Length: 239
Ligand SMILES: CC(=O)[C@@H](O)[C@H](O)COP(=O)(O)O
Ligand SMILES: NCC(=O)COP(=O)(O)O
Image (cartoon, rainbow, N blue to C red; front, side, top):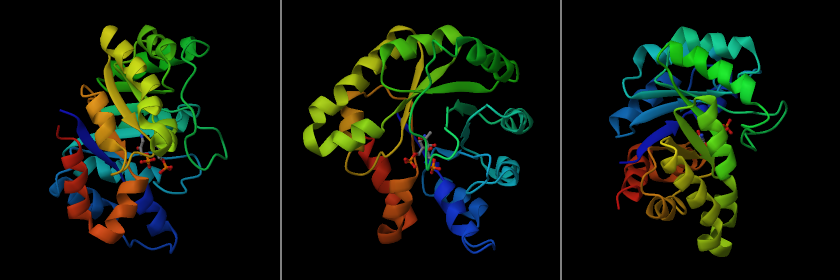
């Protein structure tokens, strides 16, 4: 089974645009769960332009499905947030400062020492650690050597080339996913997944543990409604 974790960053972005509390991120998270989502993902960034650190503390109190915090551990503040809130999973993402969104995975070979230390620190607190990587079997193997439990494959290149040639676009992801299976790691995927491209990815890599989806899902919800949208994404994950 592949779980659907809804990334609610976009809800916080909308809330922040007016400075008030509408929409309320806690209510949306609870509604996502009520409508069938099997997890909630947040990705706080140092400038708190969408999810704020306080949101993460507040969400931890109410989320009853899998809680996944994504982010760059380059600042102690992020590490402390994760250790204090103890989510089910932390996903380490090497966000470049000033980037609009995540745009690359870790080099798990060059960053081996850093990742190994961080992963140990989180795992001591029983927090599952996933490492965001490009679809490269060497990076998957590197994440395993660092002690990660899972990798999250950065799916933007798959999404970008889906309509051009989906068979070709998915090949590196299948190879990376096979490596994860071979070395005994769990497998997540995310970034720009949508109602267009999700089913084919699931068909090609049925052993994915989780997909985290935000931008497209929240955009679809404007037209289709949140409950209906979540149900539609869940259906794409049924083979
Ligand atoms: C790691 C990843 O691909 C997502 O967490 C993505 O960064 C979503 O964050 P934004 O919604 O802020 O773009
Ligand atoms: N880890 C990926 C994620 O949480 C959502 O990415 P996107 O669907 O907003 O591109």
